[in-house]
Length: 320
Image (cartoon, rainbow, N blue to C red; front, side):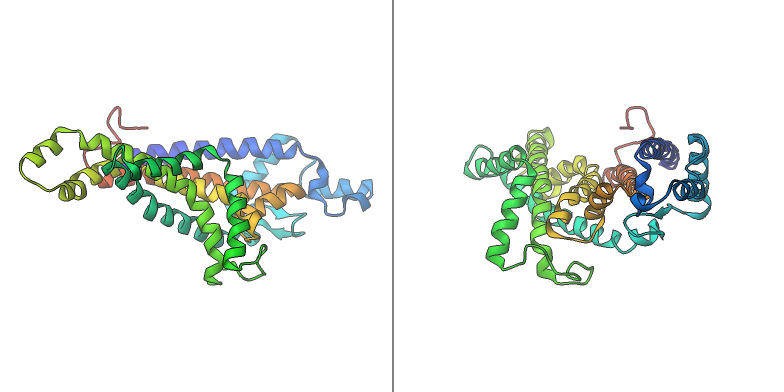
């Protein structure tokens, strides 16, 4: 396990380096107006001095060197120039990260609480009405674009629950109004709920056909005990590795949800800084998303091995 983690961490560092380098180069190809809040009012000399101060007049490889030097030695993600002039990117992101994490965590929890039981119910009633009803839900969620049912939930939810379309400032905080979280969490959980139900149904059906289940039935063990003690546990193990990844997908999905409900988190911020062409902010947010994705993949493997010691990540065929 230790050797595997070392290898994965080294590969993760290389992956992060490639992602950041590509994004850095692409961002540097954007118009220089993205570095000046009052670009239209600045003289040519002021623009030239500003570019020199930010080292943007240097060759690309030298700019990249200074970027990594500041990042690794100071933890400096740069300064925002448009979103908040001359404010460190890390200072802007610090209060927004907990909000996005809370929104993503609650959505993932709701998806697990409803998706896993739904999949088990569908498997136990294979071909019957409950299975067909659950399949219909999965098909609708997978077939209809997420933006469509997000809008429907917002439209009807705000009318039924009396919630405002755009929530007032201070509502979406880590300790704010609980009711304000209902619609965003519900919207974000629907996709993962369908995903978990679909796959846990498949794995439960596959496990139910295996010899150990037949043997347990012959010994007189009840169907409920077989399901809870053996089938569900073995069916849940393959799902484990996808849970951290689905958390990342949930956080990424919050880009639209946070903009839709006015949630002051990372997702809405990314949309805003891309529109304003605040290049330093874009790079900082991309770095955070990349780190969450890579950590999620590693954590998923660790969880899978912890729950099922039969799985080896160091032997050939064990790595994904």
